[in-house]
Amino acid sequence: MEMLKHSVHGGQEKLHQLWLNWHRKQSVTESVDGEGEPEQPLDSRVLVMTRTLTKQLQTTCFTLVSGAQGLPSNIQDRMQQLRQTAQDLHSSFSSAHSLQDISSGILTQSREQAAKVQDHVNELLSYVVANTPLTWLVGPFAPQLVERPENA
Image (cartoon, rainbow, N blue to C red; front, side, top):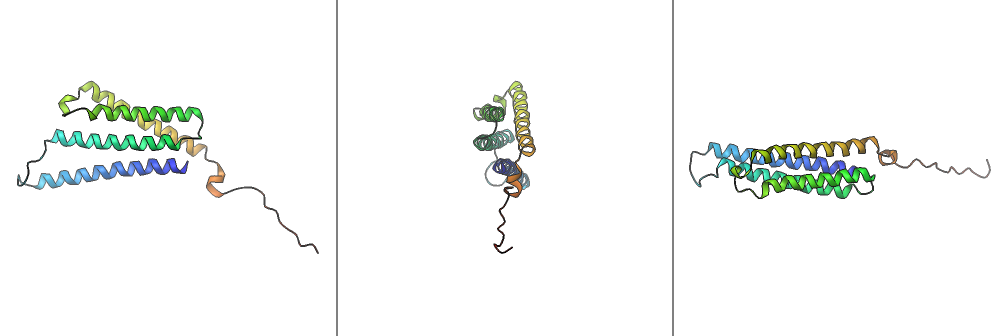
């Protein structure tokens, strides 16, 4: 279960790092006054960033699903739904060549899918937090045998 928490946190950190890298590149390109190579149009950069983020989300969800082995079947089913939703979300953007290729319906559906992914991850974390065995936190609670000296 700790692996699941670490995977989710690691995925969030990777997504945040991707966003920061994109933001830094955006700031640098805005400061350049048209010198050098022409910049890609904004919609192309947004599409590339979205593909990268949804691919990273998909990878993180695969990791979560593999880490959910041994959990109750209802939680594993939700994690399979999470994996499928993340895969569908990535597919929505991977085939587009520009933002104009993406209809407002697909954008609305993608927003709903992203919210569903977040709900599934929150559900998994809530389950793990509420059902973490104490032995995972502080070790085994088996009674220890205390040997007494024979002359006691």
